[in-house]
Image (tube, rainbow, N blue to C red):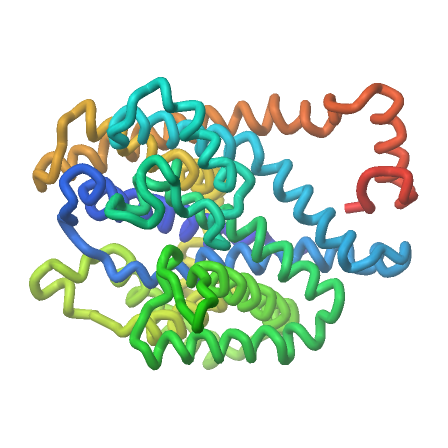
Length: 412
């Protein structure tokens, strides 16, 4: 059995903490003072997408044979995947969204409290995870694409990524089930090259909330960006699966170690160092298109995990932090807003460092406690399907075990 890759967990927690830092110095300060203290390039998001696509492909391959044998349609396979993904993320997703709404309403929005229920109703599209499509990015009470920043318009702005897992993840899964070879060999790569090529020619890093206009047709750049990121993850799964049992020569391992070290250090530097810092910020200032290409190679080395640099982080100690990264990502922004307002941070550089440190500790504690609650209480309760009667639960269980269409879902 192939050993577990803890290097992935290390970079998951690293990226999660970095997102927290970026949102302290950029998003929180913009929400409170309309100015950013430091600016990051915001182009090192692709590895996070690729990791998600890699595990989506892993999930698909685990059930592909049984789905074919049972004659389960591609559409039903994709809906089953979406249902499973949605139910597993639903508790933390709802808590994070509602927590973000309450925090923003109290500390950021300048609205009377008696309007809170109606304002929440105007956020329903976010609660069902549609904001990656553009549906739900505006709110009539604070102006539809008016002067307020995106962090004010949305309940918990960083959760656009989770919306992408729902919407783009469903589409990718369907295409895998419908025409895996055509999708991975032609459709996905062509779409990715055309979209990224268009963005590159405009010198426009595809920010998730930016809009593209093609005549009267408008779409949010994060939608195709997420779709392509997940697709690249599927492609890298194929590459890693082909190479994982190969024995490389000493010279090849040395070459991969040098290449992974150089690329990995560039990605880590670019992730953490703001471009607004004198000298250090421009020391490794790399165009976003080049960062995307480097990110693909970087993620490939991490996933293959045979070079010396990647294996340096392959330590079991990162197992729990890696799992915790998801909860940090979900809860960090509302916690930043609460802590920042209680401390009256504003845009003062020294206080922002304190805000970063306190928010990190609080988010880790809250995330860990909710992770325990979710794993030990909520998810076991969900598996019992308490929303059904006892008789219906027995039918559902029978369907899951036999693949009978009278049950709820196909075998996982």
